[in-house]
Image: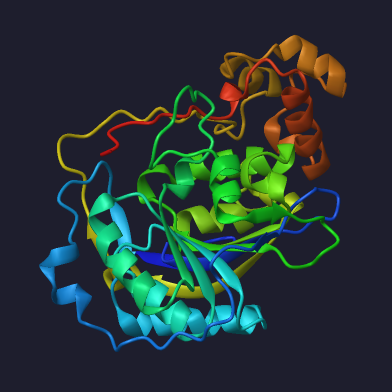
Amino acid sequence: MSVPRLMLSSLAGAGRFCVLGSGAARWKSVRARNRRGLSDLHPQLSPSQGFRDSPSWLPKNRSEPRSYITNPKLATTLVQILQKENRNRHQLFLECNPGPGILTQALLESQAKVIALECNRTFLPHLQSLRKKVNRKLEVVHCDFFKLDPRNSGIVKPPIMLSETLFQNLGIEALPWSEDNPLRVVGIFPAKNEKKILWKLLYDLYSSTSIYSYGRVQLNMFIAEKEYEKLVADPQNNLYQPLSVLWQVACEIKLLHVEPWSSFSIYNQAGGPKKSKNKQCFMKRHATLMDHLQSLSPVNAVAILKEIEKDGDMKITDLYPEDFKLLFETIESFRESCRWLFDDCIEDIIL
């Protein structure tokens, strides 16, 4: 029986650690610079304090399952991988939901600078104490990276934030595409909403909004093996779908590391299951293009087909990557609503 794994990729990984770098020169993408409290001190950190065995940092309540790196050896391995990918020893990283800070500490020991975006208040005191030890080489913010810039936002409050507010507070400035030094983000995609998050990031990338309005971004993420295989699938693969095409067109996707789920500490949701609100975008491979467009409630299917000059009886499997790209851009240009792609849902957040 196969063991469930996570992949670290540059985009992301399920146990796969992978890199998603916004790489097609056609797409405006950003890298960022930080000018506040993260300058030239080389931190001297204390050895690991056995956080895995300590109950003091365990979250009291969770709104959804979260995975955390609690193995110092795994953290060291990841830092070595990231150092090979990025030669600048003083590179700035945005770390998503670091939890007990095991990877945070390993990054700081490598002389990197870190902005820790943590959505769970339980972890904030420990991360703040770590910040004091490294003399401001670390910034800590009560923020959920994966829920930045909600489309249904009225008044938002931490951990929900607007990227403009976050980056202004941190002194991060937008840089042009030509400066090949992207903002690097590291973390683990929440297992519950991986596909929804991938669609949201894809929308932000193609529209140059949210974090991508600040320049090039490189996502170094753990992602479920199944989702990773969809991202890198080729047209002959049954897993190939529009999500695959659009990410492959926009980014270079690189597998960095594979790790079994057993290497992570996972904390489950308190309470009963909740209904998923994810849109099912282009999921039936052999349905017609008209069927798919009509399933996206805010979209005027007839107008879209006329604009892209395609027959509604075509099957999705007959479209080429450039057709998917044109379809994506055409739907967005109608500006009826981005709800065709995903629904934002801020639910069960412990404030």
